[in-house]
Structure formats: C-alpha cells, structure tokens
Image (tube, rainbow, N blue to C red; front, side, top):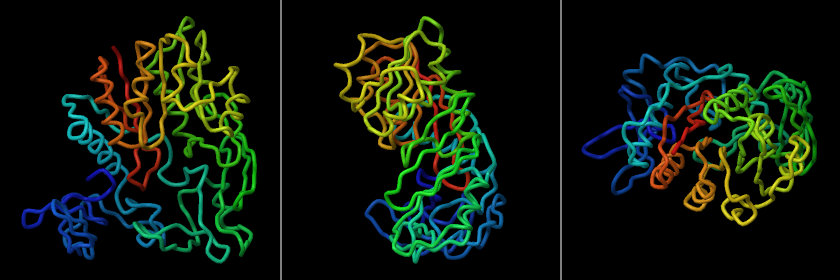
Length: 362
C-alpha cells in the first residue's frame, strides 16, 4: 500500500498506483492518468482477491470518497498503516532502523466520528466522489457516532444551505447541527477533563482516539512537577489541560482566535496567540518538554527550529500525515535528536488516514 491509500503495481516496467485494489490481488485496471515515471489507475475487476477483502457494509462505498478501505478487514488496515509509516520514514526521511510499533486501534471500526462535515445537495448530506468535485448524496454514514447518526437521519431540509457540520460530545451527550455559518458550542470529556469546543474549531474527531493520544503523549514525555511544557499548535488545549496538569508551567501557542478562546476556557494558562513557527520571541528561553500537533503540512524547518530552540530533553510529535512526519523526523535528527519510536494510531478506520505519535530525545 502506498501513502494515500492506493495499491502499488508494476506493469511493463512502470509503477502504477491503483485505486480500489489491495496488496497481492490480480486486477483489471484502467489507467486514469499517465505520467513519465508513474501512472494512476482504477481497478475495474478483481480476478484474484486479497484474503483480507470483505464485503463493505455501507451502501455508498465506492461512489462515496469518504472511505477507501471499507472492503478490507480491520487487521489488514492496521498493518498497512504501520507499513506506510515505516516506508515514509525510510524513503522520505532517509531514516532506517526506526522502531515503528504495531498500529493501535483505540475504538470501534464504525460509529467513531464525533464530527463530520457534509456538503448539501437539495438539502441532503453529500460527500465528494473520490478525486472528484462531483457530490454523492448519502442516505447513511456508518462512521458517525450514534447520536450523530440519528441527527443525520432526522436532518431537517434546508434547500438553500450549502453545507452542514454535525458535532457531538460522546461523553457529555451534547450535539450541534451547524448549517453554513451558524454558531454553536458543545462540551466533550477526555482523560477526565471537560473541554469546550466552539463552532468548527479543531478538536480530535475520534473521542476514544483523543484519549489514546493523551495517554501516548504522557508516556513519551513522562512529565514531572518541575517541568516546563511547551504545547505548540495547542488548539483547544487537549494536551495542555491533560498532559500539562502535572507540570510546573505550560506554555501553549495557538493562532486561531476561536481556538484561543476555547484554550483559555479549558486550561489554566495565558495562551501565546501567534503562529508557532514565528513565536520564538514571545516564548521563554528554555523548556523541558514539548508536544506539537501541527496541521497536515507538518512543522517544517521553522517549526522544528522553534521546538529545539529551548533545548527540550523530550519531544512528542503528533502527526496526521506520514510524509510530513518523515520530513520533520529527518529535521529533528539533523538537529541532534533521536527518533526513539513511531506509534501509528488508527483514528480513522475504513480510510487511509493515519495519526502518528513520534518520541524524540536528545
């Protein structure tokens, strides 16, 4: 499996990335885009199926681009994700002999999403067809937690609305339905702490997964009462309020104003409102521990330089893109840190998306 969820094939000396195929299958495929060094294709027929292939339970699987791997068994999905992380570290980060631990699956394989954003077609929820701007109208979405599934089924028709966001607090039972630019606040509980989540502000979309990330970051950092923790891209304070609870001081950096307001409500601190990459002039001279949870593009050179400027002894990098994670891991290595291990977390079963917690030390 390649990063991005496509199976890798070779035909007449050329590499093809095949949508809808799984490793060790024999398929008939149609080339959809030909390039000089590789091509993209789509499986039309499966002649020899993988032993891990199964019937997809969702009636929209295939046309809907929300899930890519529903027709694969959960154990296979988890192993592919571990292999993808290892491959990206090896080929993109040029890092060999790194321990990539078996993928952790923290919750159910369906009914795990506490937030979902849909386009609307004639007032009904829709998602894009894979690699297309075409919308597929949906009658069900099996990824939604139970309260959201019922909201989805009973969703009122808003023919003039373009999009809708469904959110739920799994632990609190609160729900919100936000059409277009409507506003709303819910609360969620993670690791014994209640968080305010406003509107469409970022919060982990899998509550069981958020619990697991807190546990893993705590395991990496092993915070103590004399430690100063730097929390970069702090969002609403998931790590500041939990991992940081036992620290002497927490310095949390966040640029989004809505997230900053939530952060103030969720953690007993004064946030540094700034882009993390340019926040160094406003930070203390040193810190002992760092947790960073950057967007998909990763930390990049400026972000890594900001992290290492305080000479922390341990860094927990939470990443949602294996290639970005590998690039950042190489930058940390060049800065004198060692990647002790990478821990994939299957926050989004039925899709190729992977969350990773990396443990770095110097």
